[in-house]
Image (cartoon, rainbow, N blue to C red; front, side, top):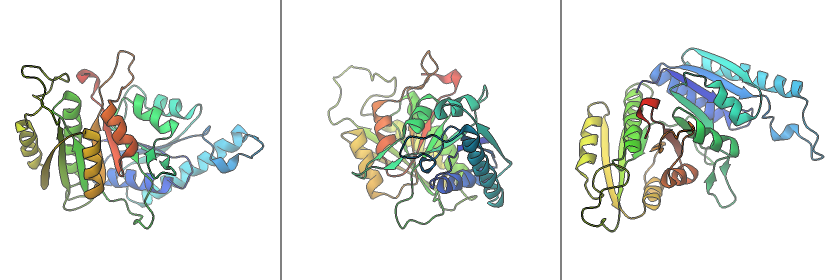
Amino acid sequence: MTLERLVVAVDGSKADERILAVAESLSRATGASLRIVSVAAAAPSYMHTRSGVTVPPEEAARFHREVLVRSEEEARAAGAGPVDHLLLEGPPAQAILDSLGAKPPDLLVVGSRGASATRRLFLGSVSNAVVQAAPCPVLVVRPLPRKAPGVPRLQDLAVAVDGSPPSEVAFHLARDLAAALSGKETHGVHLSLLTVLPSHPAPKGRAPAHGGPAPRDTEWVQQWAEEARAQVPEVRTEVYEGSPVERILTYLQTHPTDILVVGSRGLSPTRRVLLGSVSTALINHAPCMVLVAKAPPDRET
């Protein structure tokens, strides 16, 4: 997969700096064009009063227009590829989705709400709707932990794979992104293939429901790893047993990871993407950025 067109959504909040920095880094590494969008209806919280008074549409539009102009200037100064911006109107999630058009970008970058009181990460309603329904891959950028360096780190990538068609799409996206980053934006890029086998083998003769390999067959993992090594400096395979979500989250807690790539089930007849339970849990709880891979229309699953 070639990354030629990137779109990043900003809203004028403090999180914009990191979200934009990630998009800039990806644009520089891949040479992709960068479009920055913001939705006028998504006024920041400090523009509302406790009495419930809403911000006039013209004031919200002016605020977001200023955000876009400033963001474009920063992206150009950072050396991103061709950059432009687009002011959107309407319900935030739908406005962003509608702006993608008939020919969606190769990647959409959005932010998450951040850490809750229990320190677990959850997507906001806008980000969640965009991740679920976008027809293209979506990168969810987490807020920076305290005392973390401001420059986004794009060196250690991991991809959750189980041999199914959706995970194969995720693998190809992770491989191509790691290859683009190698020797350009960063040096020493690593890619880890994470596979979790069921603790108890399926009954003999029962075929896997997702159409992938037999539940405990791991030969395909090594084949995928060898394929990736032709483009990526260092590729590792990690095979575990147990709960996929628990095992992968444990890995992320003990191994520095910048981006986790996960697959989705594919496009339903209504053209909305349905995420599996494992992917949804990882998107909501992973301590790193999460890239949701989407199969192109001709590869719906």
